[in-house]
Length: 260
Image (cartoon, rainbow, N blue to C red; front, side):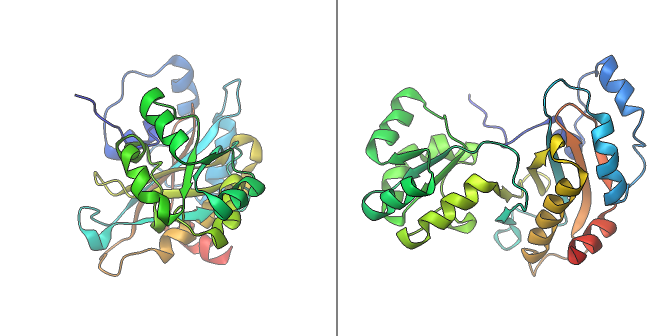
């Protein structure tokens, strides 16, 4: 049986679920000793500490895991949306567009990496081709894309109007530019109500990472379900690819996101 894991998945995701991970390396234990696991850091202190914990020889990605006070198993408490990060993710984003006619021309002009219809559907079906990071489609293409839904869906790649990836021709250029610039989409996992996404690269610096973080928090506040009761932000943890998690004071994050 094939089990499709949440996308993206890192050790940070499993820490939020309380899963015990295998014994860590000496290097990891050394940098972890610089973090007080019991402390909820202010946003400022957390992002200032983050680069001190990155010892890898590559530019590490910065992840955030946010446990929300919602029950995603209930339709009226599912939190799903998209957010334009002010400074992008620091990644090169490859965009596949399913469109024809005017919409296809606009997608190409806006910088989409792959634009077409049946040829790409067949390539995914026959070759398991997945050399792209985002997928956009016009509404008229959605019935055709249904043939590869089982491939795209579990990987978080299926176009969805709720995150702005099912668009008409007049919105195509704007959508492609936003995705190439670092627009992210997110969804609360049914197991634990955790939002897990990327907010940038360590090399971007603390200030830009904080701006991106606040943009995400603000987007989540706007999407808070009216039926969600109690504390909305249960926990927030950030980490670099190879680094330990740093817990952030949820009240501080909420307050500062409203000021930024």
